[in-house]
Amino acid sequence: MSAPLRSLTLSLPDEAATEALARQFAPLVSGAGGGPVGGRIHLQGDLGAGKTAFTRALLRECGITGRIKSPSYALLESYKVSNLYFYHFDFYRFTDSREWLDAGFRDLLRDEAIVLIEWPERAGGLLPPPDMQISLVYAEPGREVTLTAHTARGQTWLNAIVPPPPVPSPPAAPSAGA
Image 1 (tube, helix red, strand yellow):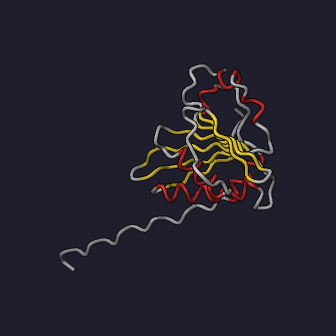
Image 2: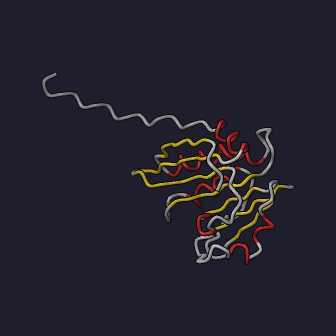
Image 3: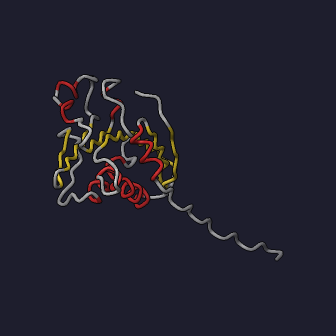
């Protein structure tokens, strides 16, 4: 994978914060924000870390209606809005890094499509670098996300991301002597 250009780590206290982050990406990848259409996003994290929740929120914000299924069993779910193609891959079930090539997926990694890949590490070093790598880890009660730009496009996206406001701490209880 290419050397990262820049990273940003954010706290996501709940699923709503994960969805809000995904909604910030929608205009960046769909061209609605004035930039180029398309891009590759790799999503990493343990089972249940929020990869599919992020993807569903992004697809909804881009105009996908109807059921958005996890591609865990089918390996790929594809969608289209107007002339914009979305490809959501899940490589979790791969045991050999070449399986995604054998499945013929290379042809779908087009620059003008939005390509979201869960478990990209299962493809070894055979995938082209993503524009953005999104790594989600548990940080109770929510998640911590690290956004890493690997291309100029990813750097542009990273510059446009607005961190969520900090969660206010509860007020301290008054001391007994006050």
